[in-house]
Length: 628
Ligand code: COA
Ligand code: AMP
Image 1 (cartoon, rainbow, N blue to C red):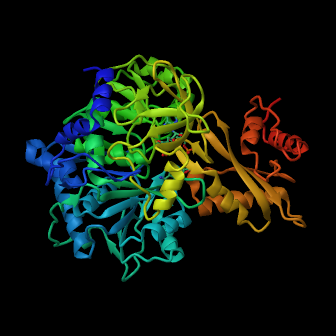
Image 2 (image 1 turned 45 degrees about the vertical axis):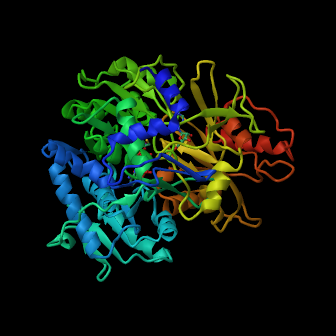
C-alpha cells in the first residue's frame, strides 16, 4: 500500500489502525481497545493494557536471539573512545542498575531526574527507570543550576542520576557543582543522588546523599521488568513555553511504544539489525525518541555520539561515524549540516557512504541551500520532517518505508497517519490551500503524544486546547498546499529556535528583568546564518542608572549563562531608551524582528509612538543588523 492508502486506512478506522500497530509490541496484557475518550477532550490510548517499555527495548531482543548484537555504540571523539554494548550486556547493566535503584527505594511512579552527557549510562538510566515503572525526567547538560532546580521542584524526584562531568570541545562541564547548586536552590530535596564518575573528572560526593554509580550496584539483586498500565507516564520532558516556567510534557507508556515502533519501519525504513543514528542529545525529545527508545524498541543498533558536527576533529566527523558503523538512516538538525557546509562547502570531505539510505532533518526549518547541499554530496534522499516535544514523533514526514513521495523543498511533506492537520484562521475556521494560518491538529492526537502536562492540567488546556476547541494548537504557523504538503513558517508564540534548540524569550526576559539596573526589557530571535535564530536583548535601564552600557550588557550575558545556561546562547544585548509598544502596552517584538532581519515591515496601526522604531533601528544598526 502507498502513503495515500495507508493514510486513508487510518482515517477510515483509527481504532483498527492503532490496534494493528500494537501487534508490534510485547504486551503483558494486550489492549482490547485503542482510544479512551471518556474524558474528552482529554484522550488516552491503550488504557486497559499492561506493558513494560524496557522489556520491549531490551529483553525481548535477547529472548529473540539478538543478545550478541550491538545495542549501543558509544562513539566519543571528545574522549577518543569507542565502546560497544550488546543487547545481552545492556540487559544485565540495566537490570542491575534498576535493582540498585529499587534497593534504595525507587518504585513504580517515583520520579528520577537524569542529568548526564552523551554516555551510554544516560540511556541505561532511562531504561532502568522504565524497567521499574519509575518516571524519568532528563535535563539537558547545557542548562544551568537554576533551570535544573525548577525541574526538581516541579517533578519532585526521589533520586537524581548525574555524571561527574560532560565534555564540550572547549571545556569540561562540571556537572556536580551544578547539581549541588540546583539542590540547594530547590525546595524539594531528592532522597539520594547517583553519580557516574568519569575518568576526566572525579567529583566529590556529598556524604549521606550521594552514591557512586558502580559502588551502589555491588551485590544488588537485578530487577525484573515491572508491568505498568498503558497510560502510565513513561517520562516527563520539560520544554519551553511562553513563560519562564517550562512545561512538563508527559509521555504515556503504551502509546509511546506503539507509535515509535510504527515510525521506525514506516518513516525511517529500518528494522532489527539495522544501524540507526540520531545526532542529537538525550536531553531533547529527538534523543528520547530516536537515540534511546525507538531504535531499541525496533531492535536496531543505536549510536550515542559524544561530539560535534565540526571541530571534533573536523567537518568529516559525521561521515566518519556513518562509514565506520555502517549507519543506514541518519537524523540530525539542519544547523549541524550548515556548520559542516560552512567548513566544507564543496563537500570534499564526504566519502562514499554505501550503507546510508537517507538523511532525516528536524528540529527547525530546513533551508533549501542546506537540503540541496546534502542531497548533492550524500546522494541520498533528504527528508525534512516536522514534530515537537509534545508529539514525540513526526506530525508530517515523507514516509520512506511506505513510499518515497515527491520532495517539495521547503516542506516537511505530508501528515502522518494519526494526525488530521489543518490550518485555521483566528476564528478557528479551516482556510483554503495556500493560505497562511495557525497549524492545528484535530483531536484526538495519536498514541504517544502528550495526554497532559505534569501536574498542570489547566495549563495543558490553556496552552494547547482552549484556543481552537476540538483541536490541538501546535504553536506553529504555516500553510498546506493543494497537494496536502505542509509548510511550517514561524511560531505563533514567543518561542525561538536556536541551533535546533527550543528556547523561550519569555524565560530570557524574566532573567534580564532580574538585573538590578534593568527597568524593562525584550528578547527577540534574529535570523542567524548558522543557528537559524539567535537571541538578542533590548534593555531599558532604571532612571538614574548611569552605569556604562557595555558593563550592564556584559553582566546580563553572564546572568543568562548562570541562570538558563550556555544553551541559551545569549551573547548580544543593546541598551535603548524605550521599547516600541502598542497603545495597550504590548511590546511589538514581531516588528523589531522584521527590522533586525532587514525584512520589509509595515508600521503597526496600533503603535503608541512610531518614533521609537527609529531609535530601535539605530540600535540594531550598531550591531550590524537592520541593514538599509
Ligand atoms: N552541556 C553543556 N554545554 C553545552 C552542551 C551540553 N550538552 N551543549 C552545548 N553546550 C554549550 C556549548 O559549549 C556552547 O557554549 P559556549 O557559549 O561556551 O561556546 C553553548 O552551549 C552553545 O552551544 P551550541 O548551540 O552547540 O553552539 P556551538 O557554537 O558550540 O556549536 C553547532 C554550533 C552548530 C556545532 C551546534 O549548535 C550543533 O551541533 N547543533 C546541532 C544541534 C542539535 O543537534 N540539536 C538537536 C535538536 S534535534
Ligand atoms: P521541539 O519541541 O524542541 O522539538 O521544537 C519543536 C518546534 O521546532 C516546532 O514546533 C517547530 O517550530 C520547530 N520545528 C521542528 N521541526 C521542524 C521542521 N522540520 N520544520 C520547521 N520547523 C520545525
